[in-house]
Image (cartoon, rainbow, N blue to C red; front, side, top):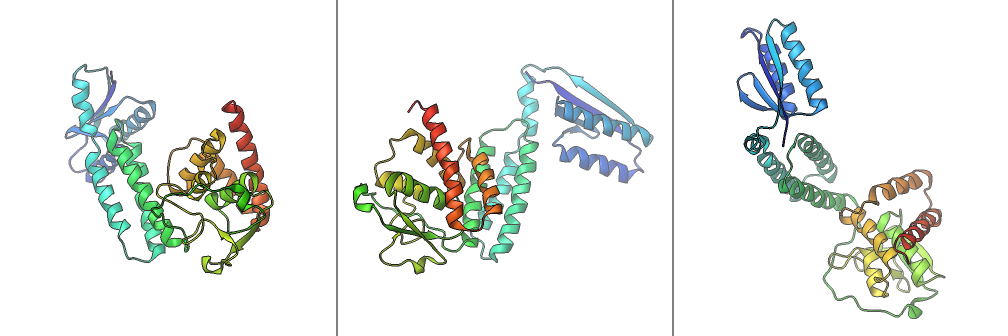
Length: 312
């Protein structure tokens, strides 16, 4: 059952400026025009407040306005809800995203375009009062293209390869030198923590300016050509889990979901909170050794919390 708001207003035909201003406001709200001067919206307190303001403005300009609250129309609710179908708008947005995905424009310009398209999605989502599968599909498309654009901006970001992940003996990977790209972010930081806590407790780390700087004796991770990087749908952290038989640890699996979500997209509920904490650390720390030390403590606490939650 859906309750409705119906705004009916009339302004003098010679007051084109006011008519256009009110029309734009109601259009931006996602109102459905039933006929000239009649607008329908689902009943919500915030929408009612805006419609009352528009009605008052119309009256102040010498026009007339009525705001009516309507109860459910029974079977007619579905027909009215169909007036708010946004699938065409999402299709147009998806088409723009597809164009951005194959764009050859400057990477910084692509980022600006991406931000604009994200704002479009956020506005469209805000007025999608009866969301369906098209909104989720558009959200997935947005995140997929966002990863593509970010990869163009960040030299050295690894590309996934198809391979069978070989099971390795951790004992053969002790007291080793491990190397990854400097300026640690989620996957590299979590992978380094995983190596030190669960694979090679005496690991030494080398932070590379470029992947090509990796010395032959080092075990590389999270860059193209590294010993451990993205494989199929797995990010580097997940590849390490699979390589060293750690996938059965439920607490590590939950951390993996966070890393995957922040690195290539996903919906881990704790991801936003962990990202905010990591951004705070990076704003305060510009040394990767120190970042691993303090970020590692965050991951230690998260691991213990997840072990407790999982009853491990």
